[in-house]
Image 1 (cartoon, rainbow, N blue to C red):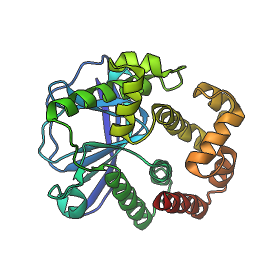
Image 2 (cartoon, rainbow, N blue to C red; image 1 turned 60 degrees about the vertical axis):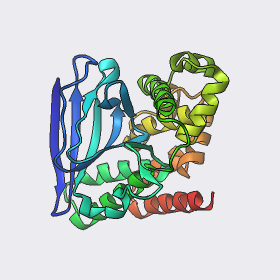
Image 3 (cartoon, helix red, strand yellow; image 1 turned 90 degrees about the horizontal axis):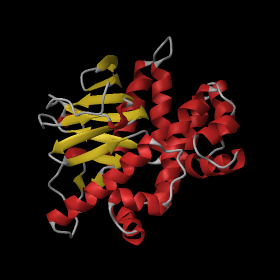
Image 4 (tube, rainbow, N blue to C red; image 1 turned 120 degrees about the vertical axis):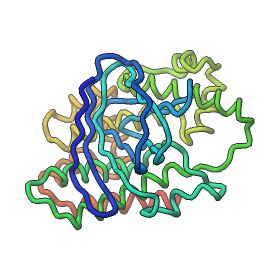
Amino acid sequence: MAIKRRTLFENETLQIGLFEARPVSDACGDVEQQSLNALVLPFSGVFSKYDAPGRYVIGSPSHAVFFAADAPYRIGFPGGIGDRALTFRFAGSLAPEQLDTSNSNRLASHGLLPANAIMLRNLLWRRLQDDEVDEFEIETLGLDLLDRSLRSMRTGRSGLRHSALVRRMGAVERVKEAIALAPADNWSVARLAKVANMSPFHLCHVFRQMVGTSVYDYVVRERLAHTLGAVLDCGDDLTTIALDAGFASHSHFTARFRNFFGCTPAALRRITTADHVAELRKIMTAQQSALALD
């Protein structure tokens, strides 16, 4: 396996890096552990994190995955396609309230990112590639993204027995893995139910309960998260991006993109081309306000 790690920003409390993996198979690697807490935010590809035999979570462009300091884990790459991700390494003293496990809202090992966090991740990546990096801006954006990501991982205690919860988590992660490997596929509930080994009705109920959104909305979110980089790069035309991502048409893609990110892909391209970072922040602030009102 070819792995590249590069530090992009570092100060006394936070390290931001780039992680790239090019695996030759989908086999799990050796047991590892981190000396500091780590948060991984993929912007392409997919990986799986195993923290116990048969128990894993999926990391994809719509997720944040947390690695607690000194906790053993193994990493796999479903489909052998690898991934590319921003990584954050930090001590517990940086975010003690977020990492506190004594209250009822425990910190899960992964979370489904809201639209403003996905947008902020890509904005941060772009700023880190600038010829002249403003360290104050990078630190501010990084801490904001870390906060939003950790908040997405807060979850209440489940009333299910542990064995039942583990079975449901396994089924849901298998579904998420299948979607992450081929988000543009023509999915159906029946097809995904076979992956989960559940009835279609039961999958819809369990998926919403465990993930907080419907199976359909999750697939759309995964597709949109995969398209954001292409939209910001201003390379392919938007119709090509839409069809490659699995949307029926340019108009279907535009409507879903606007509903999720708060602006159309064409508008985002204009803002990005002009390098209007302030406008991007307005979009993310509006998304945050909308979430608070829900």
